[in-house]
Every structure is written in C-alpha cells, then in structure tokens.
Length: 519
Ligand code: AHR
Image 1 (cartoon, rainbow, N blue to C red):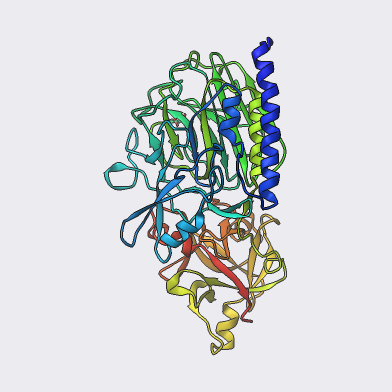
Image 2: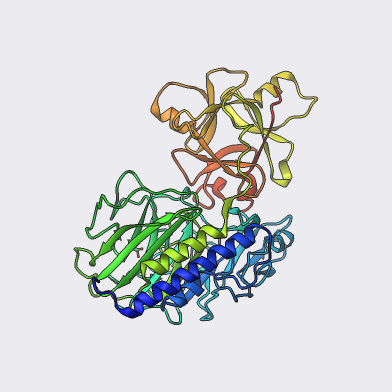
C-alpha cells in the first residue's frame, strides 16, 4: 500500500481534472444553465481505472452520457407500469412524470435500472434464507412517493425501504467474485434507519442464502448492535461481510467508527485481497472521512473473501428484511478505487445539490405556536387530530364546529420533551397533557415526568412522505410515523404485523398539513 505506482499518480492528476469538471458542472446547473457534457460519478470512476459495473439511482444520471430510464413504477389503480427517465441526458430525474402517472393512486418502484450498460438492474427480492412478506415469499416493493427530495432544485424521489422491503439481482454481469477487488458508494438518508438486519447495498450471495463468512461485501447503515458497533449509539456505516457487520478490524466494537447521521449521507466501502476500507461524509458538503483502512477482520473466513456477485438493496444476504432506510443513488466498481477517485466522486455529489423537500415550516412548528394537524389522504382532508378525554382520533372540524371540538383539535407546539430538536404537542384545552403513543396508538395523557413519557410524546418532523406538509417520526421508534387509520391515530411503520401498518396509502396517511389552530 505504501508504494504508489506511476500510473496511480497519473490517474490522480486526471481525477483532479475530473473533479474540477464536476464542480463546474454543478455550478452551471446551479445557475440554471443547461447540463450538457456533465461529468458524473461513473465518468470519474472510469477515469480512475475502476469503472462502474452497476449504477443505480432514482434521482439523477450517474454517467454524463446516460439518457435512459432511471426506474420503473407500477400504479395500483390499473397495475400498469411507467419508466421514469431524465429531464435531459446526464441530468436529473423527471419526477413530474411519476407525479402524473401516480396521481390519485399509489405507486411502487418495480425496477431500479442499471446505468452502467451491464443490465445489473434491481427488482423485487426473491425468498431465500428468509421469506419476504409479499406473495411467493418475495419482499415488498418500495412506496414510490415515500421519499420526496429536491436535487439542484428539481423534485425527485428516493427508495424508501420500510421493514419487509427489498431489491436484488442474483444474475449479474461484471460484479466482483471471490477475492476480486471492488468499490462501492451509496447515498442514504442518514436520519432514516433502524436496528433490524440489514439495510445493505452491495455484493451478496447469488442464492439469497447465508453461504458463510466472506460471501458478502456490502455497505450497511443503521444501528444494529448484534455484530459490530462504533462510537456512540449509532447509526454507523459498516461492512456486511456475512455473519457479521464490521465497523473496523475487530468483530464487535471499533471506537474509530463514529455515529453519523447526515440528512444525506455518502457511505463508501471497498475491498481487495487482505485490505478494505470504510469511508463516509456529508453528501451536501465537504469531503469524505476514512473510518477504517487496513487488513481484513480478525475473524476466520474473511481472508480471502468468497464474494458471489449478487447485488442487494435494503436487505441482508440471506434475505433478512427487518431493516429500514432510504437510498438515493449508488454504484459498484470493478477494481479497488483510490481515495482520490472517491474524493472526486464526493465533490461531484456535493455539486449535485441534494436537498430535503418541503421542509417543515419553521414558523408553524416553532415551540409556542398554536396549530392544528390536518390529514392529507384524499378521503380525509377535513379531518384533524383531536382528542376526547384521553382518546385520540381524527375528527371533521369546520368553522361551524363547537368551541370544545375546536379546542380538542388544537395543539401548542413544545420543544420535544425527549429531544429539543423535535417537537411535542400539548393540548390547547388540557394544559400539561400531550399526545403520546402507547402500544403504538396515540393517546392524550398528562405528562408524568418520566423519561418514557418524554420519549413517547416526542416526534421528529420531516418533509411529508407524500410531498405535502410534514410527517412526524416517533422519537423512540424512528421508523414509525404518526398515522391515521380508520380514523384512529397510531405510530405506524410502512408494512408490518399490525393492520395499521398497511402499506396502502401509508405515505398519504402519515402526511399532515400543519394548519392554523382552530383554537
Ligand atoms: O452479516 C449480517 C447478516 O447475517 C447478513 O446480511 C445475513 O445474510 C446474515 O443473517
């Protein structure tokens, strides 16, 4: 590793040029100029001698010359499909095409196309060591509307992985096998994760089963503590190498791997014979940090590696599907990329301009504000979260409603009782009583001062999952959001064992307009 062959130096020089081009492209795009001749991540990897062999994104082109489809959606109203492409060659996703096709119905993402030219597309993951929840033991497909963002000011959607969701390709072309070198990066939502196994993107077994140590090499993101951990409480970027999430050379804890939760997180993993590295950074600005760079883990079976060359997204190698996360883009390469190549890719990612969409209105969610919370699902746009005693439900409220009903549907925003960067909702007509969940259902209870109550009564605002208003993640069950279902109110995950976790209409049911207080 200490030797730096001349060809690597030449590549580094080329990469500096590529990075500069990428930055220029970003500036041009930012100023509204057309995006011709853009240098994108796979152009940079190719210039570095480690070309992409898979390139997946629902938000943008990953090669300057790419002008094909990014992904395919299927709508529930008539089960037809539509490819979603680009606004221009090498540019950004045409999210308006999805919005038109999916208007007044729900849509799922059926295919994430491969831009590398190798047809390594991702589709609904089949059963393996574990059966998925969909018919035939397949995993669920992602709700196409559940992860709205902006990129360079354009609307786009990510791939929202609720537990049970998974994508896979077991018959790939050009992906590393055995101990062959490879690299990969992915951009995730660093605020959307859980401790389930395993929110992965990368190399896995071709039979969807656990084939033993070293048969995977995939980026993991989340706060699973079964195998590896880093500093703090997570989430962490780790390597799923099969039968182990590794945060560094040791099985278990490696304190050099920090908890990291940028809203848009760049996560990087690469491996070659007896050498691998984890790197990560903020996709919106700044460079990559190296969390580990060294020899293969101190555990048997991981040197040499026995990679099989399938590709997974959102699941573990054996089709474990307990994880949650959101994916925006990612690539896999042939060959071990240099840090200089990855740094140039990170500069390109910074310039791409990822941004959250429809951020919560800071005015209306400021602690002390009086608000009401209106449902956005088509059935229910006159219904507001309200309470009668301790029972919480949605109720139709109009100007003609009684003063009591209006008060019962009005809330004072408080700094989150368990986390001041989130919020709690105190009843306008029952001071000291807050919305809180218990057994996943919402109630109005007096604050008993306990830390459990504080957590149960704290919700973290995000952009509305259907693109309207806001969604509110539970502070202590991060993948569950305030949802109405049959006019009752819950914290619900997108898919799960409870009826109120149903995937149909989930993104609409968890999206609320923060409106003028009725009282
Ligand atoms: O390595 C962690 C997980 O262990 C893998 O993703 C899965 O195949 C196995 O259960």
